[in-house]
Length: 108
Image 1 (cartoon, rainbow, N blue to C red):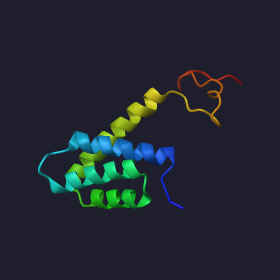
Image 2 (cartoon, helix red, strand yellow):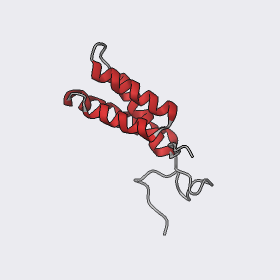
Image 3 (cartoon, rainbow, N blue to C red):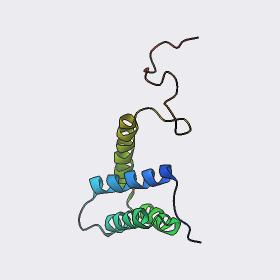
Image 4 (cartoon, rainbow, N blue to C red):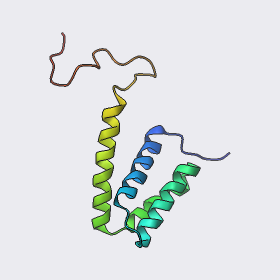
């Protein structure tokens, strides 16, 4: 039995992190290239071992670059969350009142 990553939230996180690395990428920095390649491998294979390798590669990147990557990843995640619309409950219809903003009054 082959173990794969099927959790959509985890896969989305890895994908966002890979995009953030591309945004912060500087040619010639081996640690960034290793991180980029390991994240792409994790997305390709969906292997927990590949994700662990990517985590290890991330921890070896200079703190300044890690901060920059994290900043880009948070921005990308916010954009995805905003563009995804309301979450589905149990795969069905959106929850009641999901179209209202957080500042609008709720019904009793």
